[in-house]
Length: 187
Image 1: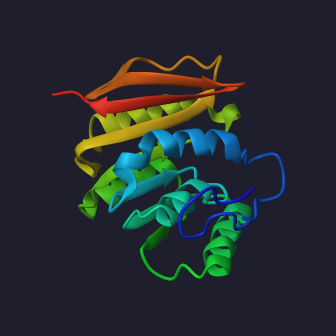
Image 2: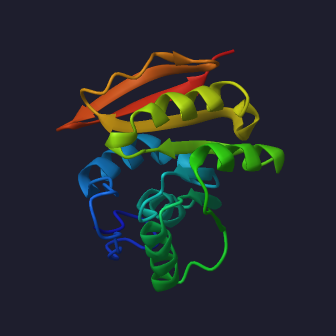
Image 3: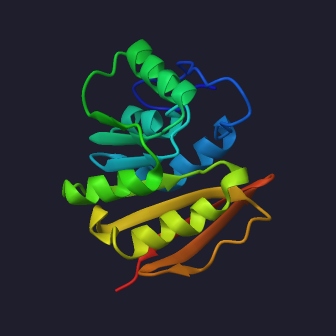
């Protein structure tokens, strides 16, 4: 696993051991960030179920002003910290070491706002998609800046709704067994 482009291009990243974390493939991450390229510079990026932190690190590498990593698994937290340390990223990031729901609530209470939010819960925790997308479309909607995009990575056979509260899916991109659902807030 490596950083695809930007300041840290081609640098390798550590992934947590075990089967609980399923890192976004380099190819899918490249596709995702090619789609998001015009919106990355100066953005605030929320990396939910961060795993190794590869997506938030990719955003920082490509010019995002900040990234918040949300991860509760101890091996994954260690991998995120190791990757940030190895790359020399000392500022512009925050690590929330609790579940997605409590982290979203805390970030909302802090008044944080994000231009881009990415979520990729473990496939065995499929109910997390609805919980998090519903929260972002309703009570945690203040986390999303005007024009924000929420992206969910999921198995291509996993059914996600077209709408969750104020969030409406506007694009579905499939690549191999994975899919990316892109949501924006409807007016």
